[in-house]
Image 1 (spheres, rainbow, N blue to C red):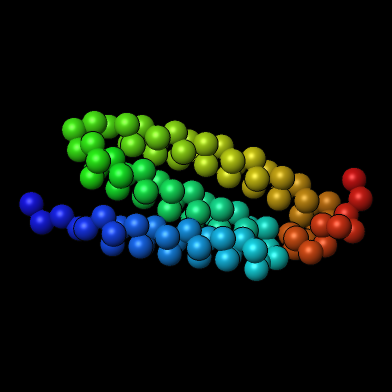
Image 2: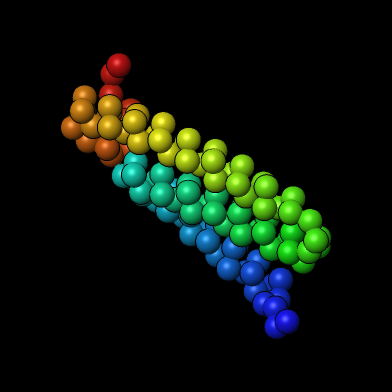
Length: 104
């Protein structure tokens, strides 16, 4: 079987992680920040699958962690989108810079 080397997979995962961090720190739109968090979580999922494949090829532990992270990410996204919708309805913006002037 012609497998992709672990270093290549980790390089892609590291790139996705830092793109997600960069997107979270530089964007002001709350939806874009949420997508950056999801990108970061997906890079962690790639690490779980890669290390499971190369360290324990007969076990499924890494895949169970991935399913757990995906389910937590889905719940986090649902709650975050509900909060963003409520903020938009009240303040007519989803700009994170304006969050300090918002009064509840």
